[in-house]
Image 1 (cartoon, rainbow, N blue to C red):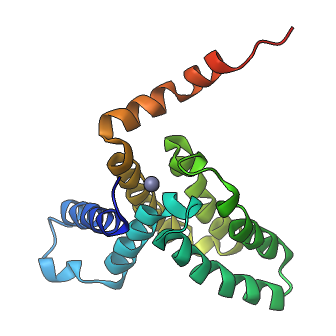
Image 2 (image 1 turned 180 degrees about the vertical axis):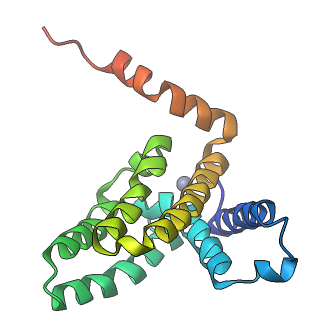
Length: 172
Ligand SMILES: [Zn+2]
C-alpha cells in the first residue's frame, strides 16, 4: 500500500510526462504556464482523491476545499451547490475503504461531473475544465495502479460487473 507521498509524486510525475509529450513541439520555456501548473495540481488532487474514504491527506484536502465552498454556497443561497457540497462533505467517511472511490469506472466517470457543472454555469470555461478533468482522472488512475498494480486494476475494471452478477443471489 502506497503512502500519500508516493501517490502525490506519481500523480505529479504523470502530469509532467503528459505535459512534456503534448508540448514537445514548443520551446521548454512555454511549458512554464499557469495552465500547466493547474494541470499538475489537478493530477495531484486526482492522485489523492480515492483515499477520501479514510482519514488521509486526500480527505483533509477535500474538507479544506469543500467547507469554505459550502459556506460560500450557503451565504449565496445557492441550493444546488449547497446540496452537492454537503454530500461531498458527509458521504466519504461513510464509505468502506477501497470501495467505490477505488472503482476504476467511478474514478473515470465521476470527475466528469466537474466539467458538466462548469458547462451548465460557465459554459465559456468548459474546455478548460475538461482539460483539468483529464489530468484529475489520470492522477486518480495512477492511484489505483499503485494500490492494486496495473494488471489487477485492469482485471478489476474488466471483470467488476461480471463478478458482481455472479455473486448476486438469484431472484425466485
Ligand atoms: Zn487508495
